[in-house]
Length: 294
Ligand code: NAD
Image (cartoon, rainbow, N blue to C red):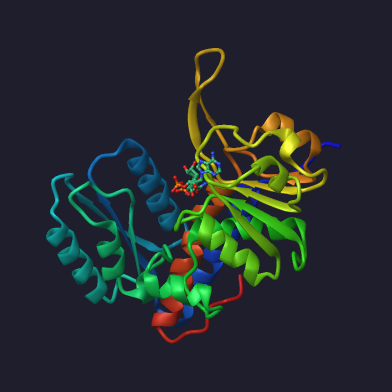
């Protein structure tokens, strides 16, 4: 059996088109233009690439992107002052601070300073707590994308066994919360888990968010399982060329999985689309409008 390839790029394009349509209606009917501030501190090359891609997508959706670039030497107090001014700015509906931050800045302090209603990354402790309590909240973008991709394969995942490898605050834990909210039976695996291959073989849905190139082998995958590969790993391949691979050995996994996300072209594009969706939802909430169901 060869797996169905979950085309994240195409699904993200559909989602972005629906969001752009909703943004046009918001502008037409309420004269509202969603605005998002994208804050980058320092010059980490990978972060610069992500920030550029996010700002471009925001513009294409008809939203307003406010780019704030700060030098790597920025102090914590200076960044907190910027966050306070963005919190107070009514034209800014979403605030995204690109991580990681330079060493002198406490990322948790910065995240906690963002107005939870503008926290389009869904990392603020209030949104984390609301998600864990089953209350409406802004949901982290990559985890939301993972579950939306899985839901393109399964109309319902209730009762399914889901294994999430990775327990980070930005991916593993919120993915697990979302799968639980969908009534899956969820196990979170991590670096101290015993016999990871055996655990993975029980999974109907396997989410890999590890950051280790091709660690999950084909033989770890239950035949027919849905595999969501979050990993983005830069490697030099056998021919000496740089390449991006996921956390799953794709060529092996595609032979036995029922469905699988490729890397690139799977979770990555959905992450950006979900950021736009969060910005739209945050804007509607701030303006007292009902967000469209997308
Ligand atoms: P992280 O380093 O914060 O967390 C990695 C997790 O993997 C940890 O919880 C750790 O316990 C677990 N782990 C490490 N080694 C393990 C092992 N040998 N066995 C089992 N578990 C192990 O990373 P993260 O921020 O959660 O990101 C994970 C991956 O997802 C990275 O490759 C990152 O680049 C990628 N990522 C992709 C997107 C996207 O949009 N596609 C977004 C965020 C992160």
